[in-house]
Image (cartoon, rainbow, N blue to C red):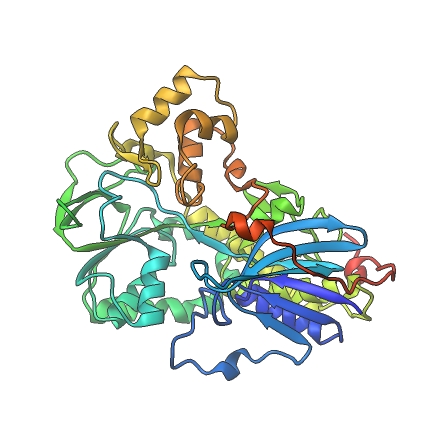
Length: 457
């Protein structure tokens, strides 16, 4: 028996599972969500399950938290807990597989500013998830702030849920950024109709879209009551005298995405510039491990799905199936990566955000570490990596384990942020669960796989 385990059921994971299953191999699709589709295809009660129908040889395991990956002879061992994270009846399961496809996605990056720890400040992704999944707006008067095209569908979802979006503040000058890479922009021409639709929604609801602007402070006693929006220069330093106070009871902030690297690092995949390095077949530096979607670069759902199709076919080839290279999908990946490069160039995170902070601004919300406390720890101790930084400052030691604050703290302390994702246990697990012994499901055969897809690089 030949088994492929796909971790993540968003656009990349779904495409990978379907592509691998087409070649007759057993596929187990694991996802932390209760339903298929991930954040992008977030399902509500009215969503038809037929849209996400899977082949018969794909087993979907929902609410599955993968907490560790081990290398074993002939493949990989995957440890997971199944059930709601806070449920008393979670059960363990351990799988072995010849090949893995990692499609764990990414999560929002939020930059700190005075007042960002007030109730009413949400990440853009959380605001959209609540609006799409439950039809509830995070507030009555909402300001959307950050950078990147994701701000537009977030504003659209909030309007659809009944909120009044007071303003969309885009920190970059997006038009100028796109003009700097016209070839990459043209690679994403299919997005133009989507962009036009969002622009129409903002126009109909009279929502101002302001470039080179951002929320630099939130005000309120017990929750958000208003925000300060400032114009920014090219490095994101606030322009003196440009601050405006806007009444709002909620803020949605999003400054791009941070890939979820925990499992990739556990599988010993090579990471450069914060993303997993892959070849033309989506193969990583770890034999038998493939990666797709935001793990390899932020480029949108279409690119993620194309990468997933390539990764699924390559994984099937790796376990011994007869596979023809998916040349069309590979061509879409190349085009999509040109668009992703242009996207990255048009919407960078500039260093001026550090000037938004005051000494008493909280930079790690879980452990209530302020900028003053962080800088004092860095100045007094020889901190050259994430582990000593966490130990001397406390930043990243809380419930989120640096998922929210890690990248920002690392930039403030000038260390490699990848260290926040290096942990032997990739997801929260109880000590009692850790002590349990689960039966290992091992279908690994002894067939020697060929080179993935047979493509030379």
